[in-house]
Length: 282
Image (cartoon, rainbow, N blue to C red):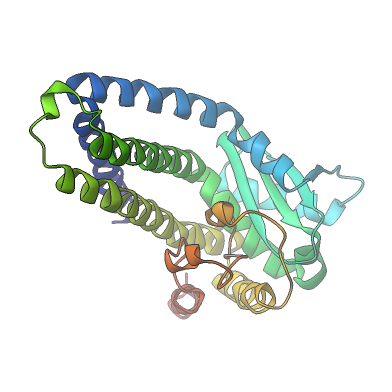
């Protein structure tokens, strides 16, 4: 069901992108918008992981430095039938984690120093299992494409707004009502953001299920999520709110207006579902 929902949302996002391009420049606008999106997706596909890791000063670690961490990831990758990802540590006390990489063969998991300090071995298994679930389902690629399309829609909407105000539309759109165009320029970015957030939320439930399956106990992740949620409001996380969808729990909750557009389902609901899985015998 979540896969179907994601496909539908991605289709809506693509459709919105085409409509915006057409309003801006007719047929030529659609072509230009499509080419621009391809270029952005190409860059994001190959370099988004390096950007994300460098943004948080994540450092690669060796087996000798973190033997237990390597042991956990090796066990989980065997359960998930995945190649061994690269492992990074983020030098922050706020507990959190994320996965990145364009595909399972070019993947990495990053864990904060705080997560290693507060989580038990079992809870860490649940968290890393969740992140491997994202890698298994290629959620990073889906999220990157969605984010790129949403960013492009916001950029094109801004162009439409100024073109409507100062008369810069193509001949195909000369008879268009400027008020309608301006309204579309305002509504489209909000719609794109909502679609992007919905895609992210639908993938979190699947990753939770994967984490519970790979670790063989849903309560490992449920307990970890409860800890991470509690600490996220007590320890400041240094970073950009625009990257909140990368992390297992939102580290910027309640700190800005973007929190109105939640990238994660409520943690309480995620915990509830995991406990239900445990009661059902996974």
